[in-house]
Each structure stands twice: as structure tokens, then as C-alpha cells.
Amino acid sequence: RKGVRFMKAQETASLSASAIRYLLVIHSFSIDGGGVRSAVIADRIGVSRPSVHKMMESLGKAGLIHKNGYGAVFLTEEGERMAGLYENCYTRLKVRLADLLPEDTDFSQAACMLLSVLTPDGLHRMESEG
Image (cartoon, rainbow, N blue to C red):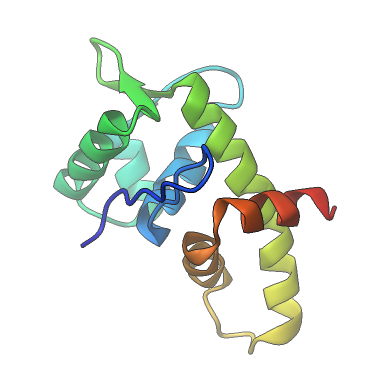
């Protein structure tokens, strides 16, 4: 089942590869503190608007995003913290995967899948190993 999964270890939630991808897209549009509309998220990821709506409900229930009255999606403080952690690890992992895997590999998808199985400790170690 896609959506948000939680691990009880420490304070960081472990997200599915799909949820990580959505979080990273929202984060990329909210660097300046602005929000992003669901249609933009759907276009960027290449999914339907109903799929985005379903994931936004899951991320909202997890306390990672909120929507304003105009339908724009914003990261919560916790969402911003987690998106930053995943973004940092994602960037490092994507570079390493590009060195290891064939050129026709979808590095973005592979990185999100790997991040989704890391424990909170593993994410923090990866982040700190700079």
C-alpha cells in the first residue's frame, strides 16, 4: 500500500518511496516559503490529480503538510524538517547511484526506494557523513 508508513524508532517517521518523492517535490517549490498547487505536483511527478489528493491526505494526517483555503500545499515545520533530511540524503545517494548503476536507470526512483527502507538512525548517519 502506498502512502505514509511510520516506524516507531526515535522521532523520525519512515515514509514510503512515493511519499518521499511527493515531499521532495513540495519542498522544491516551497524553498521561498510559498505553497504549491496539487496540479503542479501532479505535473511534476507525472500522476493524476486524484493520486496527488490521496497522498496529500496521507501527508496531512501525518502532520507533514497543510493546505490553505485556496488549495495551496505547504510544508509544516515537521514536514520541512523531514523534507530537508530526505533532500540531503537523496542528493548524496543519487550521486552515488549514478556512479554505480547503468545510465538508463531512474536514479530518482532508485534513491527514493532506498531512502524508504533506511531506519531513522541510518538517515541521520547518512546526513552527518557529509
